[in-house]
Amino acid sequence: MTYDKNKSPVGWYLGSYLLRFIELEDTNRNDPEARFTSWENTVLVQAKTIEAAYTKIEKIGKLSSRPYKGGPDGVPVQWEYLGVTEVLPIYEDIADGAEIAWTERAPRKLRKLKQWIKLKSEIRQ
Image (tube, rainbow, N blue to C red):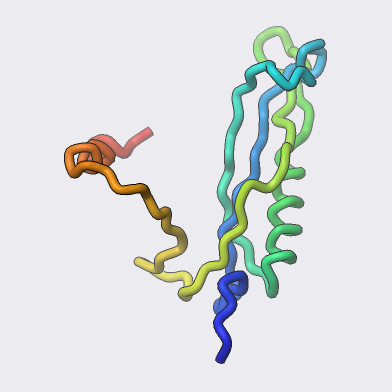
Protein backbone atom coordinates (compact mmCIF):
# COMPACT_ATOMS: atom_id res chain seq x y z
CA MET A 1 0.00 0.00 0.00
CA THR A 2 1.29 3.47 -0.92
CA TYR A 3 1.60 5.97 1.94
CA ASP A 4 0.15 9.46 1.33
CA LYS A 5 0.97 11.95 4.09
CA ASN A 6 -1.95 14.15 2.96
CA LYS A 7 -4.61 11.45 3.41
CA SER A 8 -6.01 10.28 6.71
CA PRO A 9 -6.39 6.50 6.72
CA VAL A 10 -9.13 6.90 9.37
CA GLY A 11 -11.01 9.76 7.66
CA TRP A 12 -10.37 12.46 10.29
CA TYR A 13 -8.53 15.77 10.00
CA LEU A 14 -7.43 18.38 12.52
CA GLY A 15 -7.87 21.91 11.25
CA SER A 16 -7.52 25.46 12.49
CA TYR A 17 -8.99 28.75 11.35
CA LEU A 18 -8.32 32.35 12.32
CA LEU A 19 -10.81 34.98 13.50
CA ARG A 20 -10.17 38.61 14.41
CA PHE A 21 -12.34 40.82 16.60
CA ILE A 22 -13.51 44.07 15.00
CA GLU A 23 -15.81 46.94 15.76
CA LEU A 24 -17.81 47.26 12.55
CA GLU A 25 -17.77 51.08 12.64
CA ASP A 26 -14.01 51.34 13.28
CA THR A 27 -12.48 53.27 10.37
CA ASN A 28 -9.12 51.51 10.95
CA ARG A 29 -10.49 47.97 10.77
CA ASN A 30 -8.94 47.37 7.32
CA ASP A 31 -5.57 48.97 8.13
CA PRO A 32 -3.00 46.21 7.55
CA GLU A 33 -0.79 47.72 10.29
CA ALA A 34 -3.54 47.86 12.94
CA ARG A 35 -3.53 45.34 15.80
CA PHE A 36 -6.49 43.08 16.51
CA THR A 37 -7.42 40.51 19.12
CA SER A 38 -7.57 37.16 17.35
CA TRP A 39 -8.55 33.56 18.06
CA GLU A 40 -7.19 30.53 16.29
CA ASN A 41 -9.77 27.79 16.75
CA THR A 42 -8.94 24.13 16.19
CA VAL A 43 -11.57 21.58 15.17
CA LEU A 44 -11.88 17.94 14.15
CA VAL A 45 -13.63 17.15 10.88
CA GLN A 46 -14.43 13.90 9.12
CA ALA A 47 -13.69 13.96 5.39
CA LYS A 48 -12.56 11.75 2.51
CA THR A 49 -9.75 14.10 1.38
CA ILE A 50 -7.66 16.94 2.77
CA GLU A 51 -9.39 19.32 0.34
CA ALA A 52 -12.83 18.26 1.59
CA ALA A 53 -11.58 18.78 5.17
CA TYR A 54 -10.43 22.28 4.22
CA THR A 55 -13.90 23.08 2.87
CA LYS A 56 -15.55 21.86 6.07
CA ILE A 57 -13.15 23.85 8.28
CA GLU A 58 -13.78 26.94 6.16
CA LYS A 59 -17.55 26.52 6.56
CA ILE A 60 -17.24 26.11 10.35
CA GLY A 61 -15.08 29.23 10.55
CA LYS A 62 -17.50 31.32 8.51
CA LEU A 63 -20.38 30.22 10.75
CA SER A 64 -18.45 31.70 13.70
CA SER A 65 -18.44 35.10 12.03
CA ARG A 66 -21.71 36.91 12.62
CA PRO A 67 -22.19 40.52 13.70
CA TYR A 68 -23.72 41.27 17.09
CA LYS A 69 -24.04 44.13 19.57
CA GLY A 70 -21.24 44.04 22.15
CA GLY A 71 -20.62 45.66 25.50
CA PRO A 72 -22.93 47.81 27.61
CA ASP A 73 -23.27 50.36 24.77
CA GLY A 74 -24.35 47.77 22.19
CA VAL A 75 -21.50 48.54 19.77
CA PRO A 76 -21.76 46.62 16.46
CA VAL A 77 -18.92 44.05 16.57
CA GLN A 78 -17.93 40.79 14.91
CA TRP A 79 -15.45 37.95 15.07
CA GLU A 80 -14.42 38.17 11.41
CA TYR A 81 -13.33 34.97 9.66
CA LEU A 82 -9.88 35.39 8.06
CA GLY A 83 -9.19 31.89 6.80
CA VAL A 84 -7.88 28.38 7.39
CA THR A 85 -4.43 28.21 8.99
CA GLU A 86 -3.80 24.45 9.12
CA VAL A 87 -5.19 21.10 7.98
CA LEU A 88 -3.53 17.93 9.24
CA PRO A 89 -4.56 14.33 8.59
CA ILE A 90 -5.07 12.14 11.65
CA TYR A 91 -3.40 8.78 11.22
CA GLU A 92 -4.91 6.83 14.16
CA ASP A 93 -8.46 6.00 15.19
CA ILE A 94 -9.95 8.61 17.52
CA ALA A 95 -9.68 7.13 21.01
CA ASP A 96 -8.13 7.87 24.39
CA GLY A 97 -4.44 8.38 23.86
CA ALA A 98 -4.58 8.63 20.05
CA GLU A 99 -1.92 10.99 18.74
CA ILE A 100 -3.67 13.63 16.67
CA ALA A 101 -0.97 16.29 16.28
CA TRP A 102 2.69 16.93 16.92
CA THR A 103 5.17 19.74 16.52
CA GLU A 104 8.86 19.28 15.84
CA ARG A 105 10.92 21.79 17.78
CA ALA A 106 14.42 23.11 17.19
CA PRO A 107 17.04 21.80 19.63
CA ARG A 108 16.95 23.65 22.96
CA LYS A 109 18.69 23.34 26.31
CA LEU A 110 17.08 20.99 28.81
CA ARG A 111 16.43 23.83 31.28
CA LYS A 112 14.49 25.68 28.54
CA LEU A 113 12.50 22.57 27.64
CA LYS A 114 11.55 22.06 31.29
CA GLN A 115 10.14 25.62 31.40
CA TRP A 116 7.40 24.55 28.95
CA ILE A 117 6.09 21.84 31.30
CA LYS A 118 2.87 22.62 33.21
CA LEU A 119 1.82 21.11 36.49
CA LYS A 120 -1.74 19.82 36.89
CA SER A 121 -2.44 22.81 39.16
CA GLU A 122 -1.49 25.16 36.29
CA ILE A 123 -3.73 23.82 33.53
CA ARG A 124 -7.03 25.47 34.50
CA GLN A 125 -7.80 28.59 32.46
